[in-house]
Length: 147
Image 1 (cartoon, rainbow, N blue to C red):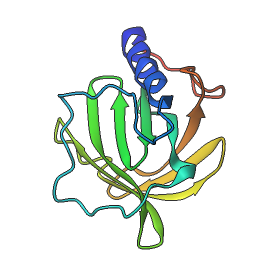
Image 2: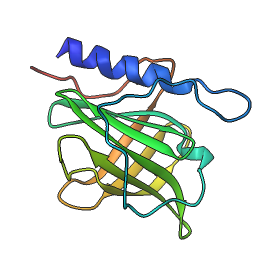
Image 3: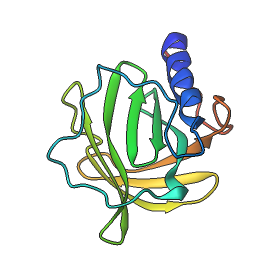
Image 4: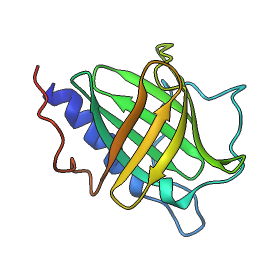
């Protein structure tokens, strides 16, 4: 579990970098698929930017949003990538997962502020609450994970 948690933290620590021209210095991964054929977002949402963490099913789930790009990384190996931002007056997240998982494919952001973001995913997951991660550290208040 510690190795997976360290990997999630390392990935979230990479998401904060960007240059003044809006490009990102984050490394890309070749294992994550690109979102093809999914509805496109029309613009980035500044409030969504950053690294967000939650726990689900005993796993740490990191949601990283940079510009209009989004990625989910969960301990255990789930890697998803796609888009996030404004779409038809709503804030939406569209992802494709490398392992074929459908748990977090389309999400609507119900609320977001400087500390928390609530996303309702289509399908069985429903609503998840993410906490903003600062400086590559886990936010306080997360449930203790057991192996």
